[in-house]
Length: 125
Image (cartoon, rainbow, N blue to C red):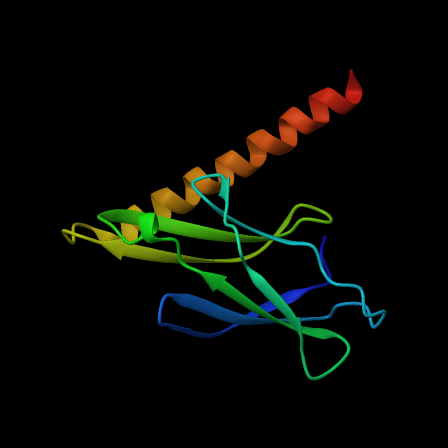
């Protein structure tokens, strides 16, 4: 379980911005991962916030995610593989957008469970 909490600030100019609160006041940078279709998103920015326990997170949207379909980004505390939040981009024909977003989120959660199960199997062998 992560002590970090994620709050969305804004989404503009191809970047999702948020704030992480609850980091230990040690100055140690949190280990944050962002995944899209179970692939790591590169070039995320994590800058120290106004207090020693907050960090500003900037996630650039890769060009391949700006396309038809539903694209759900999952934000994790990689130190303990805890999901902190998510956001979804939808493009193209609108058909049951809410249902499609939920199915995409379930797929992403299933990918997370598969990774955790595989890691557990390797550790217990």
